[in-house]
Image (cartoon, rainbow, N blue to C red):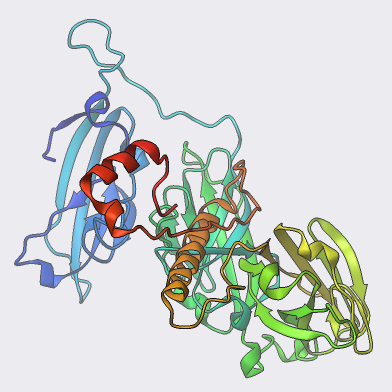
Length: 451
């Protein structure tokens, strides 16, 4: 891209980005690059490749589109490199024009267009919490609620937060704790520490710190008007270390810290199965169909109100242990709904000793019936055992990818629905690998051996 260039949307499309090339001999000196678009600060890129809208850390990890330059008009872009001491090195500026000849009238004519404005006023509608332990495969955790507690024993310790928006929003300025301008995000999804769409969400290191955190999100419209700011406050806690609250005044309050899965097929002698996590898969061929869930807690509570699959008042437990299906002394009663194949969402709202509700904790998990090989009788170490382990590993991995992408996607048929992707590996004999047989298989088999 050189000064005075003309970029035709008809030829190149409207999904564009710009990379700043850095001379090999200068690369060791460059610590970060500040980008300016039309004389206004745009963003900072701290590692190569230096793309104006960011990337996933490499070309293969994905490059973010710069939507601002995807419309007809003239643009000036400046890249300002800085060394590790903050000293600015030689900047580079280029001015170019974007045209669109696809609707030209007459020879050589070009058209002009304006940025389409949404008919819906823009606003922040909520905040999503993401687990970014694997930044390339982020996992949605939950919609954040005001003043709730996030236990790293339940949800992990690597997080970021996305601001949900509707309407005409083209930019969001984030503040985090004392930093009123933590990051500027110029395209959806608007994620606190940046992203490469949902293929890569960068961890926000500050959110790993125990204590109270406050995030502000200030949206801007396509006309550069500042819209209504939204904010959320929540606390990161670690129940394993006994750090449950931010202020000493709240040390006696109770909190839900996790969930336990129980087999209640013999109610008088319930059997503990596992600690259950958000997006877990529970195979009733392995665990049985007489299940209940206990809410773990700490502090002093008067009761817990359970919600199940949209019923916010499914059951009220006034005494410990706090069981979804209820109990009497050592008798644990099953929750029949948990045996139904499909997604189940449970909420647990604790109340303090004065009857005031405390932060609600919620999670979703998937019940399947024989989809996994968990109930297999294959002898350990055998070929069949290896095949079944591979099938389950691939199944759980693909299920996680699909659920992370679609569980919260508005309007999609999988929104709020977890899925289990079952992988079956078929063993093919040596004779089937000969050329004539391969041709026959290609003609007769509609799906691959591993599906």
